[in-house]
Length: 443
Image 1: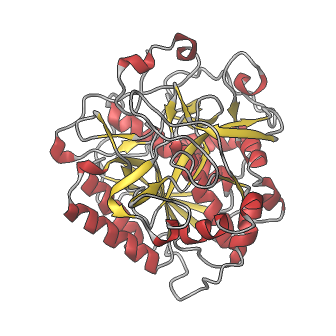
Image 2: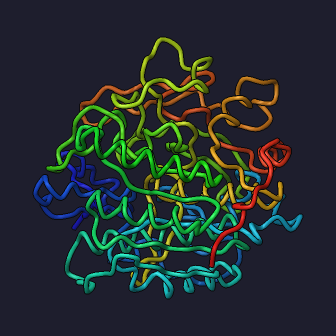
């Protein structure tokens, strides 16, 4: 049976050719509107290991990495090669001395064991993971699909942040539920206690789900993060120009918290790389049967100054800002609830961007803080083609909602594109934003 972490129409799941090889997970009917449940931006099914038995053998471990009869999948070695991360790791830039904070919900009962399995399988160093639940937790119910979805989400996020920045510490901060208020409370705790250098948020919902008072509270938390030079990243979503509302249906619009201008919104592409070496072959904007890169224009936030030059003819803040591989046709592999599966969506991409920030923070010896002004300045300079892959084909039309087409420079599918991480970090390390007394994480 096909399942999805977020609510999907059955029509989307009727593609038999994909059904046998993709991990798709779905939740139950949405809770009442008053709870405003956030939706994890991932699609992984840890119930069935349809990527085959893991036999640690270096770069190629699963059949979808080696064969041509199923959609391609990638492990850490391939992703690091494709996006030029390995160059930095070889230089000792691993995120050492930096902390990545990941916001989740409920209980990550198997996150540590899943992370250990992931690390052992891929030959990664043991991760320094600490799990915090500032508002308490509920007893984990393995039959509750919402709780399972968030457990899988946590596993994906910590594993792929660690894969990119294996030397960084990871703090998984868990909200007591998936309700907006509880998620915000966990984020506020992380910011107020200065728990890390970058905060990763692989979840979201339509802006129409909340009122102005909530957005003001959320923005105030993000402003405090900016004052402490904490970088914020969030998934732009997996349903193209539409997002899920509180009752689980799709409406046109963009996702928050990614829509806040203080947050770097991460969209998706279809990555094409050599399945063994990871050599980069190209990318297109993500829009296929497995989902679509969240993108469009905010109805809450106006066009920020940093977008004025590259985002023409719009009054609302444009999403996404950047992207990474997210399609099922080129997915990454994650361990969750004791098994392996394909991670489909912008969740892993967001966690990977958090890892990239940790690498840049270590290289520059200070926190980057808000990333967007720097990214758009790079995209407006001669360095653009050396630092970012400008994705110029593909679209994010999804399930009857007409999206945008990828094109030159910024677009509402892949933003500014995907990074050559070594080149990007070489520019970001020269940032003029220096240290202050708060550029230290608490313990």
